[in-house]
Image (cartoon, rainbow, N blue to C red; front, side, top):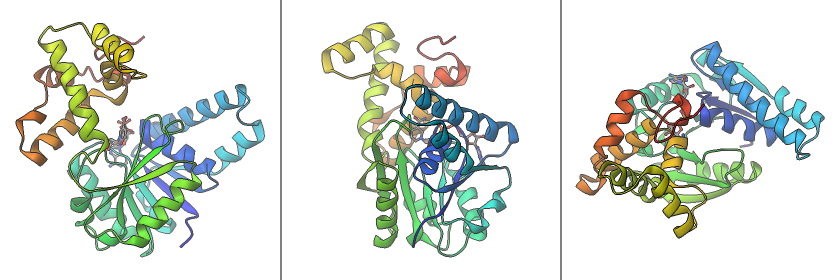
Length: 283
Ligand code: NAI
């Protein structure tokens, strides 16, 4: 099966990036969200990224226009009726995701592959609400999508080899590298990354050091390009908390207990960069 028409559900941070790389790979893309305002914001981010690429000489103005012309926006889920491939990138919440997969299973043609960009939720459980679990897969892009090379591809219990192959081919077409992993809470990326971020938050909570000092230690001492707290603000503290909860519940091990300070910040609406405040303040 050749993927020609591609749909992204959720036009936030990740969804808009995924739509951009898909359109750059020559696919026709439908970018969907619940409100006009959200899809337009997503399209605005894509336009800004492409304009910067033109300014830096990485793309021509014609290429930029051609990419933008391949993207249409939608607020009607029925736009999924003639697509070959869907990536869902809505909020990290199982109930929201399964409701969308049920709808997509009803609306899309039988050949359509349904992928989730979830950071940590079980693909097997998402697949189980559909009548095509062999065509459901995790396609975990990294943030910022246009820049980061990795796609962590998660096989659910029933995911077929053919579905995996199509996703691996598609990743290559998007100039990304697919790495295959199995379906366990947090997969590999967030099982390793998130406990480190959570531990850095415990260091703030216990007064071991300031956020600036903690980030400096990890940058200068461990050669990380970005400190864990800067990264947490970038990912979104709500997303970090969801992932820690998935790890904690999924393994039942207290080593994954989300730091109370992380909970407090999320409750306060301090979600990081996207809300203007997290461990740092953003203008
Ligand atoms: P975001 O909050 O920026 O965007 C989510 C978008 O989904 C919003 O625009 C929202 O309006 C939309 N949405 C919510 N319910 C919807 C529905 N029923 N139908 C259509 N659209 C709906 O979130 P972000 O950061 O883009 O995360 C999305 C997914 O990507 C999550 O599963 C997250 O775990 C995952 N992810 C996030 C990364 C990050 O660094 N932020 C990295 C990799 C994966």
